[in-house]
Image 1 (cartoon, rainbow, N blue to C red):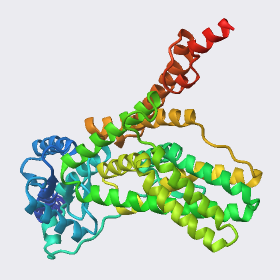
Image 2 (cartoon, rainbow, N blue to C red):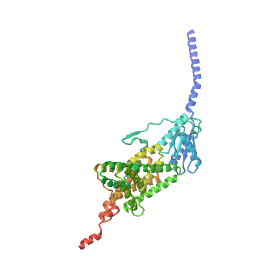
Image 3 (cartoon, rainbow, N blue to C red):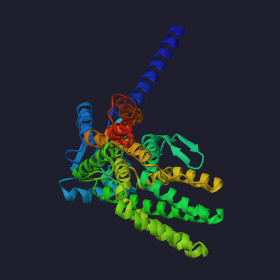
Image 4 (tube, rainbow, N blue to C red):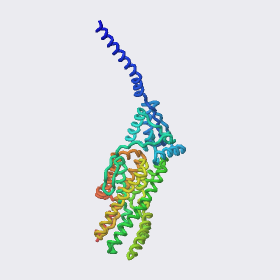
Length: 458
């Protein structure tokens, strides 16, 4: 009996201890359950423009997020194109976060912000919403008002490659990089600038001095590049400030579309009607400036000064011939919300590619002391390609600029422009002449019936 009594007592003691432990654990378990079940509210600040296609895409996405998370996601929406007071608010937010609002949409969640909208940014915004609801996130308004310090989130490592002579390129900006490479190269083979350079080199050969050719050629190319850089920077700055007005980008795209068609016209009817070439009446003045360079060949500094004057004058004269592509490229960067740092890096790349063909021609001429002038038919073919590319890019900017956010679609746009160029050239240069139809530069070689009749009569 004593044994049973002791066993029974042990069971009772163990039962009491176990019950006591359970009693102590219940509050902790309930607290843990409450903690795991509790979710926070996320405040999202969305700045958009009425009629902006990227904004419309993000609006659809945010509606889906609202349907998914309900009251736990609070969206503060501000329209900026037709409400100037919201532009001021956006600038206040952007200043606090340390960036220039180059366009819309702009989205803020806690310490993070996004300019523009695409598939990658959609995933990042959705992740920020989900994480904020689960773990909590600071209200952006508190950061702007100074109630909470801004703590920049750790950025994921960007995929970068190093290219000789250019440096590191972030593959996150691959579409702008590829577009810059192609547009820069095409803009570089400009018949106007190439004509001036080849004419200048042809005259410099008569000095029989490689040193003078090298100095004058490099000065001419550098001054022309500097003026071009200033022009492109001005265009980009203007379009950036006007990026809140969608109709400005539409007008710019429409203007470049017209310029593209004029370039195409120059292939079929060179210098007839409106033409983006150096006018014949301007050429005597250019020749005179070139002669001034040669006349000062005995004095190197006077020669350099005359070259600077020549480069300035030629840049102004050939403005109508060279201005279209910088406008197209700048409009493309603004539409893709390129930052100032990205613009500067891509501008350096653009200028290098723009001058690459001239540097090659210049180097060959200095080494060989021989120069060849650009023929008119070569200029017409370049006009054909630049016109096709300009029309394709302008149509994309008018229809759906988002196509240039994707590398494959960007390459497709350039590929279509190249294909159309090849087809037009083959048809007009190879096929139609077989049937006695002469178009474009082939009209120069069209056999005249008058000569044929005269020869027969003899």
